Image 1 (cartoon, rainbow, N blue to C red):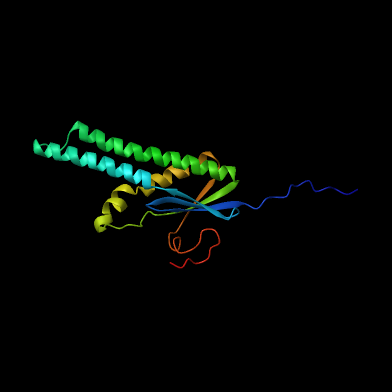
Image 2 (cartoon, rainbow, N blue to C red):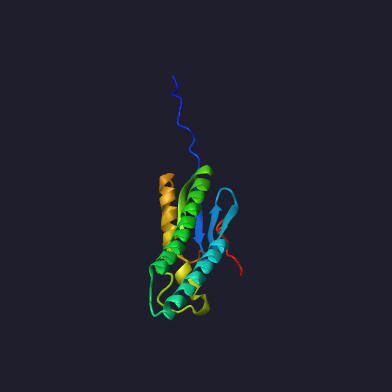
Length: 173
C-alpha cells in the first residue's frame, strides 16, 4: 500500500523592498508583482511649511513683547508634530494592508540611523533635518507590519537608490 504525500505545495515567499525618501516618502516594490507603489510626501511637506510659518509669526509676536516662548507657541509645535505623526501612522497602516493583501511575508527596509551626520545642508536644512523624521516613519511601519505578522528586516542603505527595487538592475541617472 502506498502512502500519499499530503503535504501542500509551499508557495514561494513574497518579499518587498521599501525605500524611504524625503519627497517621495515610500517606494514599495513587490518582487512577485513587478510594479512599484509610490507614496508622495508633498501634501505633508506643504502642511509642515504652513505650520512652520504660523510658528514663525507667533515667535515674532513673542519677540516683540520681550518673551521667548508661550503656551500658544508650544501648542503650535505640538499640533505640527501630531499632524505629521498621524500621516505616518495612516501611511504605515495602508502599507501593512497592501503587504498582507498581496501575501508578503518579509519587508526589507533601509536602516537610515547614521545617514545624516551633524552638518549644515544649506537651504535644504529644513527639509532634511526638521521635516524628514525617518525614524518615526520607520517605527510606524514596523509596528503596523508586526500587527499583520509581516517580518521586518533592516538593510544597509548603500546601493538602494542606484538599483531597481523590482529587478535589481542598475539605474542610470
